[in-house]
Length: 271
Image 1 (cartoon, rainbow, N blue to C red):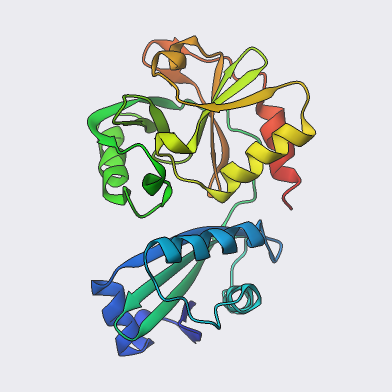
Image 2: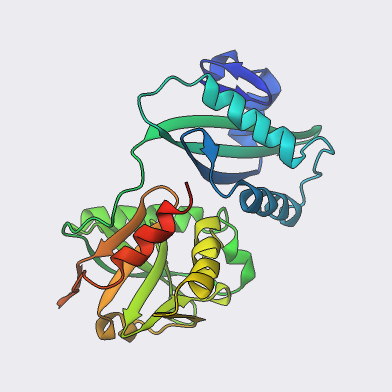
């Protein structure tokens, strides 16, 4: 089931012509969300990120796009989407054309958050192109094509993922999520000035660990690629997959035994 600008349709061919034309030809802003047992996780933070992104893309935001209205449209779509899963990934796209702003919502059932998987997960650096450092790259749409090419590079080279670098040759993120490096009792993550996306789950985890965990200190900073080899563990975090251990980076193998419980505790408290 797809919510096409407030109208539920079973396929886009049933959507209104203006929305479909805009989807194919006009500028858009996307946000991926997650629901668990009918509850939209971190909805307030997602809403403010959506509004900020629309403003930065110079969209004229309709007065009716309130937090309550958009939440109700998501819930309406969830209720009409049959699935065996308790969790859902929600794809929210806003499209601009000459007459206004349209939105499309689609939903997929996905497994619930699980503890970080201890399966083989290898990554390397993607060095064919750079992410521009600075806050414009925090928008998910800015470097979308670059991330897609990097994903193809990882697949072609037998990797599960790869790390993007910025124009200062510092770490940004991987193609699948935010990057966390564990060194002793310190967790390093690239700061927003590095050009990483300001994912809602990234912001939530960074705030949570500072308030709820005294064992580890989180530092957001510019990170040189050599820090990957100096780290004891590497964890990726995303709204789609939760937390994922990295097992290999080139000839470096990681322990996978210290911080998994912290990420697991964080994900559980989101429910």
